[in-house]
Structure formats: C-alpha cells, structure tokens
Length: 411
Image (cartoon, rainbow, N blue to C red):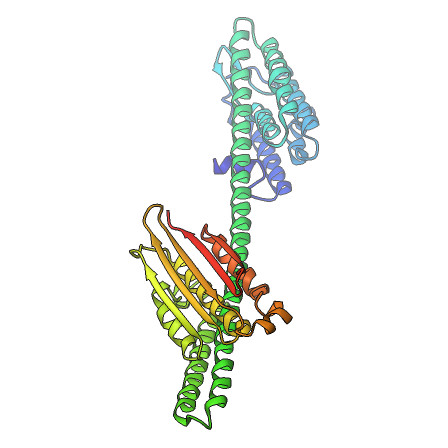
C-alpha cells in the first residue's frame, strides 16, 4: 500500500512521481525487443516509427496529473498501435499470454486516473474506456484467441482501476482521521481554556469571600479594641492579637489561591489546589466573628450527612458571607445561625438571620443599612448555591433585620 501511495503522488512530489513512471515505462518498452525470444512471434524490427510510438506510450505519463484523460487516451492509442503494427507481442496468442511494458503503461495510467480523479471520471474509465480498450486488443488478436485477449486486458485494467480507487479511499480515510484528530485537539484546547477561565472565576469568587470577610472582621476588631482601650486594656490587647492572627490567616489563604494563578509552570497540578473550608469549620468561623463582639446564637440539628467538596464549601461560604454582611451593615445586632440536616429528603438547610440595627430610628432613616447583601457578595452566594443544585432566599424580615436562607439538596 505504501508503493500505491507513492505511485499516487503522496510519497514524493507529484511531478517527480510522474517523471519517474514515464522513464520507467520508456525503459521497459525500449528494452522489450531485446528480451523477446527470437522466433517467438513474427515481430517487426524496431525503427523510427517504433521509437516514436514507444515515446508516445511512455512520455504522456510525465504530465498525467495535469491532463489525466489525455494521457490515458494517448498512452492507450500508442500501445494499441504498437500491437497492431506487430512491434510488440500479442496480449494473447498461440504462444500464450504476454503482458509486456506497453500494456503495463496503460494499466499505470488507469491506476493514476482512478487515484487522482473523482467518481464521475473514474466511472467513465471503468464503464467506457476499459471495455473499449479490451475490445480493441481482442480485435487485433489472432482468431481463436480474441476472447482470451479481451478477458486478459479487461482484468488487467480493472485490477489497476480497483487498486487506484482503493488507494484513494485509504487516503481519504487517512485525511479524515487527521482532520478529526486536529478537530479533537482544537476542542481539547478550547475545553482547557474554558476550564482555566472557570477556575480563575472560581478563584476570583474565593478572593472576594476571603477579603470581604477577613478584612471586615479586622476592621470591626480594630474599632472594638479602640473603644475598650482605656477601660479594659487586657481586652484591647486580646482584640489586637485577634486582628494580627486574622491578618496572618488572610495572607496565608491569599497566597494559596494566588499560587493557582501562576500557570506558567505546573499548570493543572492537583497539588496546587488550595485546601477548602468545610461545614466542620463553621463553628470556628462563628467563634472568630463572636470575638468582634457580635452576639451569635449557633445551633446544629439533625444527623450530618456526607457532602461533596463543593457543597461543603458552599455551606461555609454562605455562613461567612451572611455574617460578614451582618457585621458591615447590621451594627450591634444579634444573629442566629442554624444548620439543619434532614434525612428525607436528604438536604442541608443553612439559615442566618439578624435583628438589624438596634436603633429603630436609624433603621427607618437608613433602610439600606439592613437591606444588606445586595452587591457582589449576594450574586456570588446565589451562583454558589445554584452550582450545587440548591436554592437561596434572602430578604428583610418583617420585624426588622435580614435573613439568608439556603437549602442544599443532597439527593
């Protein structure tokens, strides 16, 4: 099959292939008189006419790619004339079957045409040219050997035609496979780029949650420390230490996330994935917010169920974002955090409510102070909950304050 692809012009430059075939055919035809046994057939002695016909048989192969049909017709006509003038042995006669270089040159032209041209022309070659050429050879054969000459020539040319079509089909399959591989590679590259963008979006959301919560926590702790500096220095010192620890924790989390953005090396390395907080870390989160002076009532009910990593992180971030908004907007309020595990249906309900500003007059004059969570934090919260198949409801309580209610489906 490699030889067939080479003959078809796929293993070397087409012009060089055609030229090599023409030289090979000319050499075979020129050497034919030297190899035919003397007295085998009554053949004419080679002369100028013989030389011209030999060149007409072989030379057109050099330009087959440019003019396949003309090449085929000229080569076949010259080969038939050589037989008709008794310059070459009969394809079938008293001495048996003789398939010489002239007939092989015609078969080569048929093969190349079948490889290089489409269905319409190749069908004409198989249905019209091959029968006519075989018929011409049969008419030139001796009486009693015409059927053998017809069958021999038809089989030779049909075999060349079939091999040509097979080579073309294999080349088409190979090209299609290469195209599919290229398309798959492009799709994989596009998917990889989309995955990188998705990961960076996720990291941006994580950065927002970390910075919004921890910086807000540090601000509240610093304000509280300033207020109690004169009255209870020990308490102020404790709050300053909490601010320092919160800052260190924030820097550590930011470093872990920013390492993921360094995609120049070790891209896609699972070890780069920073550890994510889970539901088990919610009590520690509540304690850190309590240290700022916010009164939080925290309770868990039901039997904890196994959670995917994404749901763990979503539950934690919902509590974190809600408490951050309470510190920023509700002032010295009271907050309630509830984690409710249900078995049937399997779900986790996360509810965070606050009483809003203690001063009702302040709340009436500044309603946006309690209608918190309407910025990027709330959008991110909704996206997180929706991504794990949950639902989120937020809004102002009728009696004052604000509630965040998330239901995470575990089924």
